[in-house]
Length: 252
Image 1 (cartoon, rainbow, N blue to C red):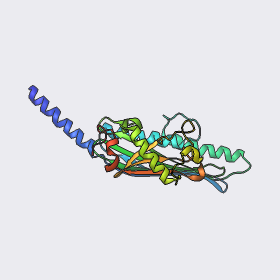
Image 2: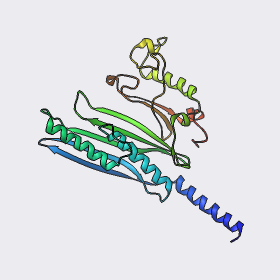
Image 3: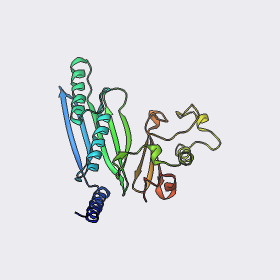
Image 4: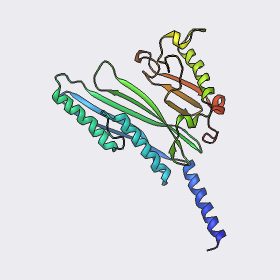
């Protein structure tokens, strides 16, 4: 076989693989399980995308989704590499053990909804919203984003997604002040309602992702404000903040 023919075959194969990566296809899957002790129950509800493309990228993304679900399900400090089935069973077993030993039993519940919020030729964003109640004064809720480089099949860290951290920080702080109606001329530290870096500095949240035409910054409860104040979600149109993103990862 000539070198030219080999090169043509490799180019065709590479183009075919790129097309598969660009058009990642998925099914939305649902899962429920429960266990009851007398009249109280523990319920697990999961809803998440499962990618069906016949390529390595789909397998890697599905593994990332499983790992995120396991971390959100883990009731104890378990190995994050454990299987999703094991994590579900561990949660239910923990309830059963507590119910059999405790004198006062309340129902437990954990629900995780994962959804694809953005996809283009290079990037995939998936949001994970978790709600849990295992007794106590109130339930807990938590959001996380997983951003994935589709071409290479690896997770993108926030500092890799954002190329101008200081620029985004300034825009975000202005939006944050407006969201919480902080009076003009009053610093966030002087306002007294917020948990700040070094007790005085504003910061970007852990949960950063893309949703359709917006960049979303999501502060979870307790991250920058009390539970009573709830989460803070800031949305910025991509057309306004796209220049702050890493253009080698985000392709408009």
